[in-house]
Image (cartoon, rainbow, N blue to C red; front, top):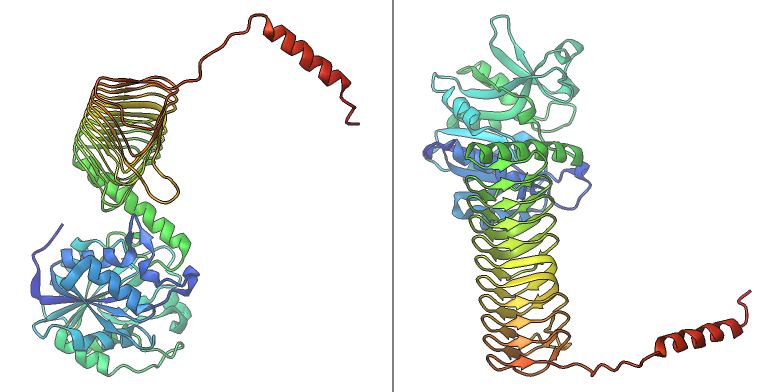
Length: 474
């Protein structure tokens, strides 16, 4: 879902921490799930919920994170710096000067929560319209260990959030937990954050302390999340993998609802497009900007990265392709490798153990077996025999090979570039082509075969006698 952006609603995304449990020098929120850094999912959720402005609080790895945000979101996202990580309250305080003055409500969420549902953020943002100063997203969980507990009075009103380290035994038994997602009135947020004090076991400024302040002001509203699992923050590699599995499931379900078939073990990045009636088989991996056309079939175990697959194309099992295009009704594989800048046009065939690189295979051309085709242009309807090699590299430069339309290249041929084989030309099996072949010409270069009658038995006898005279290795 996407809600129309409103200048009155802005978002602060907290993303300043290193994430030491990730055991990585990379900022935690730049670790990827389904092809995108986890912070992207939080930002996209805020934008989809109608935020007209997003401020991301950066700290550790700020330059790397800011560069990514600029590339991914442009001017839709700005950054604010938290110089020292002194808690969530301090992070929000760092962001306040960057907020749009027109903002009336501020959504606060964490950059390490990639499973947020924009629909729940919309519900949350609307819940303070009745006069509450703050609204918070809460969840019920069987095991609340590690979460801040939501404390309510006898009338059910929220009066505080208690972090586990600071909670009493009785408070720790509370199963309603804080998810770290809030919406607050802008004026109230500025005033309450300015008054935060580090009165806790961590010696930090807790954003949760504004809940107690709000309970004595305009009150605290709450929205109960449907799934606590969808609100879990990612703090280590195991949680990263678990969250990614959930995202892969969501992506597959979305594609299925649009009319394509996706087998349970396929893995499809969030950036991939799959059109109706396509079939994505088991253990397929689709990455980056890959697009699968209608009625195309990607068979078992294939891995495609930034590949355009036209309608009704067939990619047979265990084929690999990157930065390439596959035309309508073309066939690839099994066990083919399309390296970058390969273009296989409509109805062309690239077969088992054929590798292409920076090569155009034009309409209806075929290379069905065991070939390397690098830096080439293969004309319409041409046939490339098994074992053919485009010898494109002289140790210093790459050279082009051009095969004319309808040409036939026999098996086990070596095409030493730069060279052109003409339209309708024929290259005999086992030929080494070192110069251009004119249109409709035959090129053949073989050592003349000589048969010596009766020689085989004499050769075997001589070899056997020589072996008998050889000293023992023992």
